[in-house]
Image (tube, rainbow, N blue to C red; front, side, top):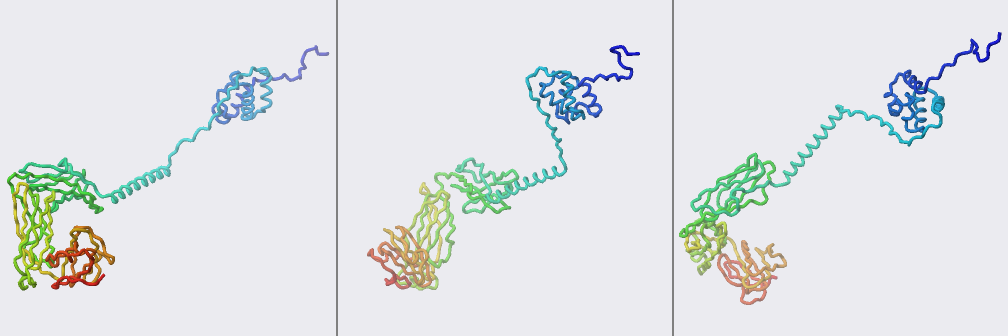
Length: 444
């Protein structure tokens, strides 16, 4: 019997319906054993787009161009034929899909590896920190060794201070480098030394005398040995009463001292004094010498010399004396004409020849030989000195002086003032060799 039209043969296979594309993709992913987040990391396609593909919700995708790209890449990832996947997509959605405004999706960046700090990194950091600290320490030490310590005085507040007339001591305070040695110098007195504390502070009690007291403060680093370049100077004045006489102390000469030349340094300090005057009186020849010191005449006494007293009370008066025994009288005078006087006995016993050359009235060019040799101060070509210049030459036997102007060149020989070498201003050379009088020579 024939089959009715339209009836299927009992042996014809029944076609299996094709699953939707989304289900096909989801099934393939599940067979691969990955979830959507793993698929996102592997394909670099955002998970929201992969989920839309598996739902078949293609309108959530950024246009057909990107949809095709996503399908092709996802099919390859899932082991499906990309062309077959694209054909099914066209069958289900057709080519009439409305193109959306293309928004380029940002590709996923590969996740940054986590920051790991190993033992090597820690050691490297510690080494770097140690090097920096060591370099800083070396820099600090170099700076310390290259610079002298600093010092300052905080009490008194000003560099010049006047205290009550009854004050006999004062406490100086200040700052310096921690651990440094602070030295306080006062002319004519012993140096006071104290140490600066860990905070750099120091203090010292100093003696005050009537008049102006000068204190020079310096610091020394005990490790480097460097000392402050410029001292911090303080003046503290203890006022005198109006009727107070000056105080006078002598540092030179010592009473009874003997000198081998006549240049006697009279030095000391005077408080409440404005000037000091030194005069000399001849007592007679030195012991063992004939009357007149070996000469026919007694050496003349020099004229009294007066000098002003410095702000710190110091004074210095050079006195030229001839051979013999002398009495020096030193008188300090105050502004109220009060005086204080001291005496010193000295003996001058010349060894060799001592010549003091003084230019008086004009400049002159001098050339001097001492014991036949050119003196370095004048040189072989001679040297021009200003009016008022005084030079002292000491030899064993002789001094020879050449001058461009004899009338202004005054000489004192072994303490005896002989006046100018000649009355005329002509140049010339004179040989001075005691006990003979100076005589002119042809030396040039």
